[in-house]
Image (cartoon, rainbow, N blue to C red; front, side, top):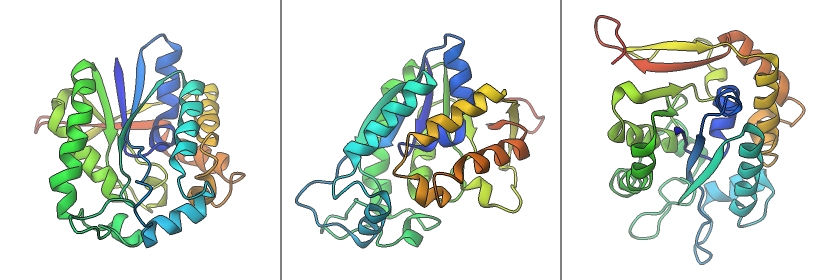
Length: 251
């Protein structure tokens, strides 16, 4: 099995849709495991951050049923198996006293990971991912470009479970698209997957399944295909990063 690990339900389609489609079309067993897929407990009040995201998603006060359905649609188009690990998104997580860990967008995108997340969320992610990583021949995880705390935690979880030689890091799109210049991660090199027109189209069709996310991510659903095509053109396809030693050898 080839395992792609996503912090959120759209991350792999956004960043890796072309490669997932290629692998699945070639008969490979591909799974997309998404960490943050749980509904917020009904008796918890919504944080300011959660209220903001819910207004953008327009899926009601308990939107994750709809978001999981979007993911099933995208995975079906790509030929991958969806796996939902049922952990809470950053916008829902709370400390031991019930206070939100992150109260606004700047707290969880580009902010520091809350100490409680290192104590609770990281071990939970490791436990949920461990059997999947053990069964995988290759593991694809986020570089955590953009610094979203969920991406940072998932990257740490993947690194703690898989050997370096088995990990490939994907460029978190669209965060990577917002950078004027992309600085290669220290100690890493990349391999480029040049996509066919059909593979780019598959990536776009899969992203379109996440209708609740398109206005927030792209401004509108209509703007999405051009943004994706432009980034693929700039990158020469999809780029996947791996750790190298001082001699440049894949570790």
